[in-house]
Figure 1: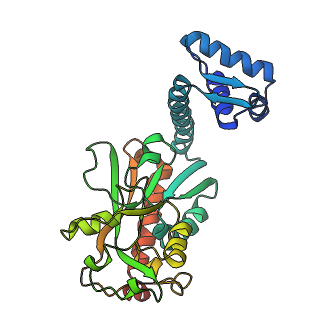
Figure 2: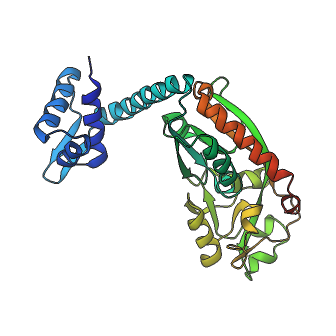
Figure 3: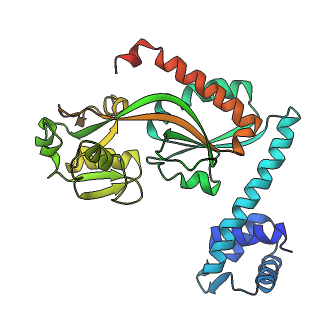
Length: 306
């Protein structure tokens, strides 16, 4: 039977890339940590680490156990927190993965009111430019994903709550020839930057396909707001971003929205959790504050003018 301390030892070794650093991280001696990992390898009859003079790396078997063990330990920690929350003790950690629009418009107000009511909950916010595959949610790396609701979600896997509409607009470097384009067809020859994990994903491709056009070739792929702004504003790429971000004072001096005849790509911003995670009291409370922030924003006259 695999023991939790041994699994923690393996996870630490892979995270740190060093047995010495891993032992220091979990507060045991290096020989004790090495023994725990050796016992795991003997129990599974498989090598879990490749050891060298420069450190350790996981084998294929080690990667499998690392992923599964990490998820299991996070689930156990979540169960302990949930038990405490059912008893009225709102503490622990809540991990949020959010697209830039949500980080800019919804997260600050949500955190302001939520943290005031539940100051014992530590909130970790991770920005994700493209959440379509929901990989971090599936792995258990985040508890809630805030972003455009993907099409064709598997039934029963996720709990989804609609927050507000959002539109993705084409943006180009301010003053460039692309900034005067009147149609998507005129931009097919431009260098496009896509968001996501590869050039075959992203909202740019979806916008072209939605208008019956062949998507342009991917010139670059990014997964950070700064990277997206840098390539569009400084390297003369063309891409998509949420309209409020394109009009933000920090971005507007460098980029502009071409006067295209085609409408922007309409999406729905939502909160997505795994079904079992949605039952946790702290998650339900956070979603309540999130809906309140979205309602407040949509009733703000300045938002309606964007």
